[in-house]
Length: 546
Image (cartoon, rainbow, N blue to C red; front, side, top):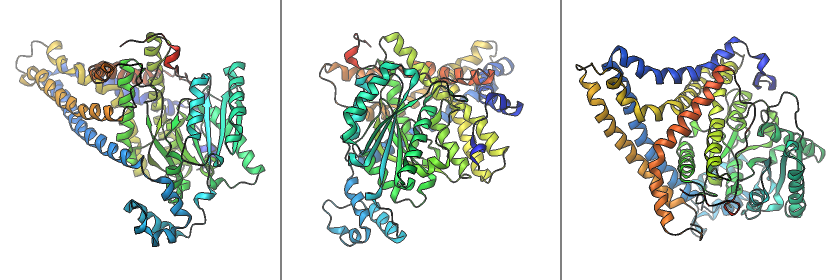
């Protein structure tokens, strides 16, 4: 498809059909929530069966998620410690590496040998020594002690910093103090990278939302000019976008380069590390710790099913791919997930996300006070949930615009997209309280045995679902970073006990946040401003208690 065909329509360009599809996710979610109530008036038995089937479906999913969590954890534990630099060096001389494969100390994994065979057969001229990394850090008003550790993490990476180009994309609206901070950091780290450059995104450019996408895209346009000016090959450059608080694992760039090189279809791929919200997990309040850990493990679950993966937060693409997609959207506040769809439609459905089983560590939500932290968490999750806006875009671009996308594949992707957002909005509420509705609303329904038994059945189902969560609790304790010295051992106990907050957190920060975003979309009250999540370090805070 052409670039013009993959752009989100501006508000004045959206006709009644597009608005209908924007209304759809919220309408479905509210209908599902209203259905048990309406059915309870008409037929408590029918309402009870509806609720029971809904809960049983989630019981099955809970066991599936527990298995996927364990599977993802094992892969992550194994691959984040793999000798990526050694395997990357093998790609410089794949035929020689194959000859001495069995002689390598500690032996390379078997899948690496298969990749060497494939890579050697390709007669690929591109080698690890040819690849350069481009890192774009988007910042708005983050402090020095947030932004500098992100840059330092690039330098402590097991990857030559002289093959890393650093762009710090900052906002004019961030003010003079932010500009001075960015320029200070660029001057300090200029000699340590192949290139270090600050790019200021002007405020109030036409047809742009206030968000990360326009900031990245402005930096990307400078980057395209730079590559042309110096006659550099875009296919030899991989671009990774980071937020100000993102810290890459030391093996990330080596693993990314390896996965990029062995894939002859690299132009049609995005590369997704595992986002782990563990930077400040010991400092965040208990509700935020539960959400941060849950979101980290959800990313781990999705990574085991690559056909469900979408770009999220930190992600990477080849520069040639970004040029083909005209960089990122400047019209949506959810530029990360939307980037998948832009690329998918640009290449007529020929696009996949490749999981990189190496983490990029991010912050759990933490503001200056407990109250501000609770509010900031809701604002962050409502922004994530605004990804429901992609539903109308996918229908319009995929089904109402001429394209060569395989409609069967598109239909299933769309179905999963709708189901994910509807489940986000409805599941916690129905699991938590719907079982009592038939009897509370229609207490005279004495003949409905199932309605009277439903609360007891629901309690048993929820107990089994909670059993699946124990897997997450156990693995989360194994993956936590070391406890800071300022906390005593009893903090470990709190890290377990905090999970009693999961039902409340799931409702307030799951269902309510999703319903908020979907309802605004229904009413045409669009979110056109990226509300930056507060990023505060513990040293700046008064004590936040649990």
